[in-house]
Image 1 (cartoon, rainbow, N blue to C red):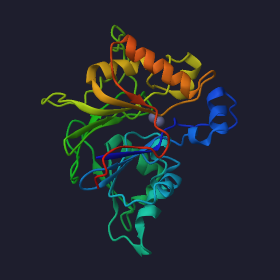
Image 2: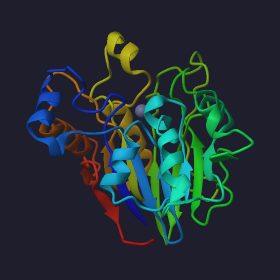
Image 3: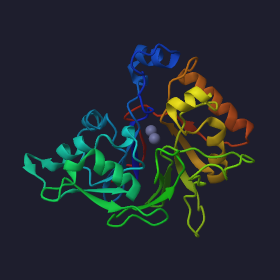
Length: 299
Ligand SMILES: [Zn+2]
Ligand SMILES: [Zn+2]
């Protein structure tokens, strides 16, 4: 399995338009640190999966060499993860100048599909569908795929019902992608939080080892109420550590990085490295740049 990080930024990308914070300025000064909206391309032994086509997907696919994509997966109905569906329809509908005979398979939960259909009714018109919805059922492997992909429920706030992360297995490798989520820490009451669910990627067969955890890290520290209003229910570093402790991945890749005053890539690296060390977790981590890849060259 080979994972390409098409994009690694949060909902507004980095730099954020007109923002002059240190993280945005660092990305302006060094374009390799600029980040488009988070999206993944997974090349398994048998097929190519595109996860979370956001507003930058067209440019991301051009940068990746316009790869063939067999199936599209969407984790939740937020614009930065789904707004690229319209671009995909044009991209995949034409192949070598010819119209593709069948619609592109789109895997999503019913809640996410509702959002997609409202936003892009024209893509699902029965007379000439560009996308064909396949229902995603959390806890069950996706159907009609050669690769084993199991969606698991996540909590990402009231505006993202039906949100999921993915466990992807191929050729003995296991990768977890959290997508966007929030998790409660030990002792934090969750009874009051409507729709809260503890993310649990593993079925009855247990964890069996995780080669790579790809997680969002929107915040280093838990955000102020104002930032929470702006950015919603996302992981901070202490909350990420809870998942790392529970899942014990061999490697960690952090994406969906967000700007904040005082932040630089170095600051994030230092804080993550110190926190892992203090928690006794000897796990190598990366903050991949856009376009970087992990794993073998299958597919
Ligand atoms: Zn997002
Ligand atoms: Zn989101």
